[in-house]
Image 1: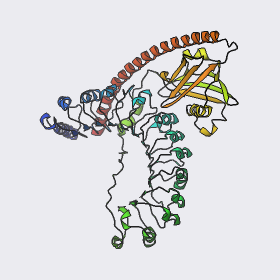
Image 2 (image 1 turned 120 degrees about the horizontal axis):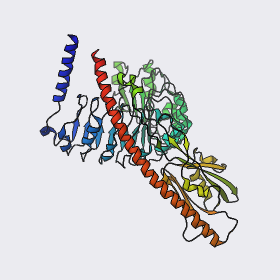
Image 3 (image 1 turned 30 degrees about the horizontal axis):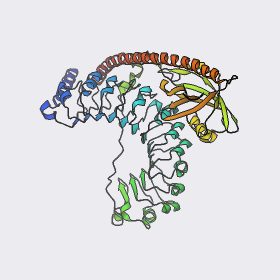
Length: 558
C-alpha cells in the first residue's frame, strides 16, 4: 500500500510540475525564463519560437534529454545566458557550437569529463565548469577567445600546469575561480593578465610563490583557507602593488598579520568568521576606504573598536551577522551589507550518480593532440649564436593517462633535423626571452644562461618555416597561444656558393611543404573521426543517464 501511495504521489508530483510550464502565449515575447527544478524531461516544442529569449535557467532538471534540449535551444537567435547546473548531463553536446549569441554558460555539477571538439569561436565571456570531472582543457577550448571569466573549481585538472599554460594564452581572461582546491599549480603565475583570483575554501597548506608574478591582480578571495599562512601570501603580493581588495578569514582566526601594511594600495578588506581581539600597530598605515566583517566576533570589543575607529570615519565599517554589543550602535554605523555575495555552490552531489561513477561510458577513440617539442641548442659567440633544430615528438592524449604514449609527429620537419643554423637577427636578447617563453619552464632570468630550449606548440598551424624571397635565409615561426617567436636564420653549409644554397632551399622547402600538406589533410580526417566518436559517445551517455535516473527513483522509492 505504501509503495502504491508513493508511486501515486510521485506521479502527481511529476504531472503537477509538467503542468507548471506556461503556455506559449505567456512566454513568446519573454526575455528570461526560470524553469529550474521542474522535473522536465524535455522542453516544449514551442520554445524554438521564443525568438526574443536571452536567458534561460534549467538547473536541477535531472531527467532532461540533453541532445534534444540543446538542439531546441540552438534555434534561439538571441540566447545569451544558459544556466543548466546539476542536471547530470555528463557531456556537452557538440551542437553547442551553434549557439551564436551565447555569452554566459554555466554547467556546474554535471559530471562532465570532456569538452566538445569545437566551440567554433563562440562569444562566451563567462564559463562555469565547476564541480565536474574535467582533467584537460582540450584543443576545442582554444576557440573561446572572448573568455573573460572561468570557474574551474573542483575539477581534476585544477592542479595541471599545462591547463594554466592554456589559460595564459587567452587575451581577455581577467577572472579565475578555483574554489575548494586541494592544491594550486605553479603554472598559475603564467596568467599575467589576471585581475581577479578566487581560491576561497582551499585546503592547501602552501601557495606557490609564482603567484607573485600576477602583476595585474586587483582582487584576491581566499576566505576559508584555514591552513595557509596569510602573511606569506601578503609577502608574495606586496611587490605587485596592484591589489585593492582582499577577502580573507576563517574560524578561529584571531590575528591580522603585521605585514598587511605592505599592501599599500589596498582599499577594501573583507574579513570572514574571525575572532579578533587586537589589531596590529601597522594597521593604521593602510589607507582603507571600507572594512567588511562577516560572522565575526570580538572578545575584547572596547579595545578593538577603539583601535579600529581611531582617526577613521565611522561609515567605512560594515557588519553582517557579527557579535556586537548594542551599545556600540551609537558609536559606529553598522551599514547594511550591500556586497553582492559570491555564488554559493551546492556541495551536495547526487549520491546515486557518485555511486555509479565507474559505470559511466568512456570514449574509445584516442584523440591525437599536436603538442610537439622542438629542441634548440644554442652556442653563444660574441653577439650571435647558432643552434640545431631537432624535431621531437607529440603525444597521444588518453582519457585515463593524460600524457599517454609518445607518437611520432610532424615528419615534414625531419628534413631539418640535425642541420645547424646561424642566427642573423639583431635583437638576440629579446628573441631569447621569447624563446624561453615558449619553453616548458618560464624563468626569464635564466634565459641567457640556458643552452638548450625545448620549445613546444599545440597546433600544426603554429609551426612554419619559409624562405625569404630576396635573400638566402629562412624565417622560422613558432606560436603557442598568443606567444610567437619569429627569427631569421641561415643554414650553416660547408659550401657557401649562392646557387647551391638556393638549390638547397628549394629541395628542403618543397619537401617540407609536401609533408605539411599531407599532415593538414590527415589532421582534418582525425578531427572528423573525433567528432563522430564524440557524437557516438553522446548517445552512450544519454542511455546511461536514462538508466541512472530510473535507478535513482527506484532507490528513492525504497
